[in-house]
Image (cartoon, rainbow over all chains, first blue to last red; front, side, top):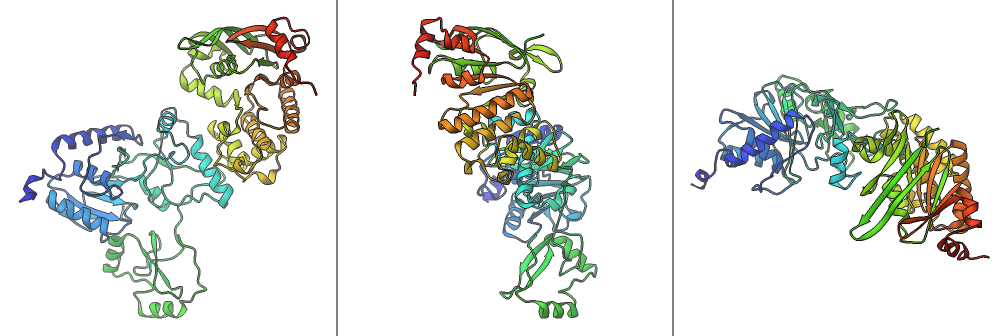
Length: 304
Length: 256
């Protein structure tokens, strides 16, 4: 009965209009952080309140929604947000990337290339890429408006001087359409090349009250130095379940003897590859035996 | 020859309080101007107005820009003024903590201005940082240390390196030797004098320390209660002060 009290997709129509205006402005000025009047949502900050509000403003009854958290469809955050919209919007949900029209994501971009009839909604904790270098919001806004991005390079310089390479592995800053420097939310830098996409990408930061966007086919360049070019690195392994070589991997500790396996972080991608008959080292009998035999504490591959 | 900086009738009040009043002077290329006076005499207000940190109430600050010749800095757009602030101008704060990024390594501090004007080659930025650390007598091995690990004198020298790396033509200094002990002061002054002569810099040095201006400055301006009360060549003003206040100031210096 209480379900009847909700408007479609939880938020009231005026709020959705306000959010859509912010989204349109964000699309018109790619990479620019548009302030919006973020609402109190029935979940804590940090659980994707910004993404949920953007999704809510984008959903129509005909949409098919997919929600992922770190690439997985079956983790707490993804499951609860999916249930939230099943209940409040009664939209179809799916785990298949290709079937979804709206995808809300936390910290990953799906491996399957997106198309121009899809919207990817990101949950963003801290939208300001300069925040940890310049604490003043007044000053960072001025730096954005005057295109003063020298400080961002100071961060990369510090990385190289301390670690010998640009050690920033996630939330790697990008420049959008040669203008705004943008935080792509904490996606691994492996996903940065995928930010140039056919799909519309929307970013919502609920606590920080900012929305920004990358329209389809917008130029997105990861910042780097001429002699230290951007490198979208990943763990040098193949997926243990589906054998994929080019997907982003999670490292899973399997025992306390140093045993570990690397599996696709994108669960849908991995499952559909396995359904198509691909096998990895753990799913073939001889591979699994070899892996178990070789598992020993001296195998210390660096984490990705 | 056009003056590098021409200031006309600069006024700044804080409510009913006078910050500085009717200040006019010209600074020629390669010249070092000292501004002396006791605390509260408007020296720092004047310097901040000149450097664009404070908006003056009335007046003109005409700077001879590289591209367009003499232009009134106060009527420039903000992006232009900020650009000037990190290319042709430099500002050395009394407290190095105000002028340095304490959480960024020495190399990053020196490189920041280079990166702000478009340097994107790590190796070259680092080479320039090393070169400048050497010129301000900081060992190259300290390039990756944070300024917090430096002594006060080293921090001040690092601040100078960070400011001079883009080859500015005008440097503003607010009590550059304040808070340093005498031997460190002497070394810093020696270094500054060398750099100023070698790079053909013009400088405006605000200080209450007459020894500093005697060593550094070509010309002197004495301020009291926001007004300039005496100007002249440094040794002329210090050895033959005309205004009663300047006489008092000169005679108050402790002799050892």
